[in-house]
Length: 329
Image (cartoon, rainbow, N blue to C red; front, side, top):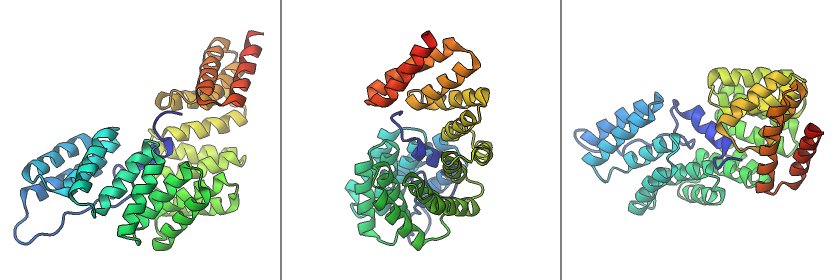
């Protein structure tokens, strides 16, 4: 899989224009001050509006101007880190968060934001540590529970993930993202009925968010409800065409329905973002084989085999080799 965490990246994309930042935490507000507002406050507010409108690069410029006006404006540093994360500048984001934590080790939002960025970078252990620190500062922060649960999910610690996500929901049962995260967790441990209930709740609470539809589409594809999966994942892509995972799961659904051309198209779209995903390469090769495009199938099967070997997935590598042997046979 690519160096980015695809689920976390999809979550960032889904939140870009919302009232929460890329890691799921509310955008921190400047600490109220007595007297007139400062120039830094105005820059921060303008930057926040631009970020919510999906203009991260412009927001970064405004946050930089806020910092120039007040080099100790911690809010501006955190928000700039969030905007950098949405553009893939993870190193720059970490630098901003680290600076805030150095100045104020009690600044909770910096830890939550750094947790989210590390989650996207697949640095799950450090993400858990950051959200744990945030929770030590405020154990009632449901978004820190949600972020830690997500990171634990990627560490395959499903029991802890479900417990943390349940805690997040107990603190705010209107958080559709937490329900979607718990849906994924329960889906992966085979608790499909509870997962479905969570995903349905997530879609009800967040009907305009691609992330909730992606989670439910993933579940539906996994339990063999291919038509329902295609419907949800198509809606996901209408709401946000950049959520590559919706292409992957829809491609799987099409594959199981023997709709080879649609499957090939979806896996191709997914591979634009995650070019070294062995499973997508293998599935695309399978679709191409059934379409009679043997040249492309051989190319993709070879790429899948190479990636499986790199990842140490010996069983999958053997399957890719068998496909190549059948194509050459």
